[in-house]
Length: 307
Image (tube, rainbow, N blue to C red; front, side, top):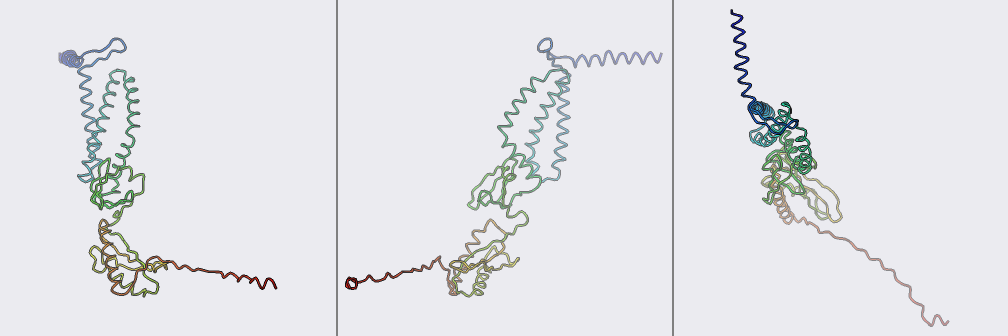
């Protein structure tokens, strides 16, 4: 009796309950006839929805794992990237589900491949910028506040996005730099290793000047200048015996490379002032020209010729 009761319950579950669920999942509508028949059912739609949820969960877990060590500002920059990846994943999931239930997706794949090839060629540089932006954010090769030189322009980085980087120049103008430039070209980063940079001001003095006195005056010219560091200690180089002058350079360190032109200008004003006070002259380019003349022999007089 007990076995018959169990069999009857299994039969009821199998035929009635599961059968009703299966009939419900098979509800839908059909397109086409024969081999081209496409059947859309509730079960298919549920399978697509469940696949979307699973894909979303996996992508979210990957994003958390990928960005767990990043700053909040850097994490927000990857939102658009993962949204794009999510949409691509959804498309792949739809094709996979349709193929699983027996729908021929080959025509769709062929059309999509041709579309993606054209789109890839059109957006090639855009993808380069985005990939370069990801590398920049990950390896920290460029940070907000860094001072860089690109295309002979110096600027301070104010924002790093996935596609472009923005910098403000010394003229208070914004330059927008495509990120692929930082990967394909050589860029000067003045503050990559530390915030201090070494600068110099070159000047020439007249031959015959007291070179040790020139050295003292050059060091004196930067003693009270704002923005110049006391350590490392400034120093002077006697660079060369030039064509028209003795060439000196005073070298010093600053903590704000962005203000370099203003600091150098102040140093030059001070050098000119000290040189005037101490009788040191800055020569202008000059050349010595030597003229050599050959005296022609005197012509013989006519009388001497007659003799």
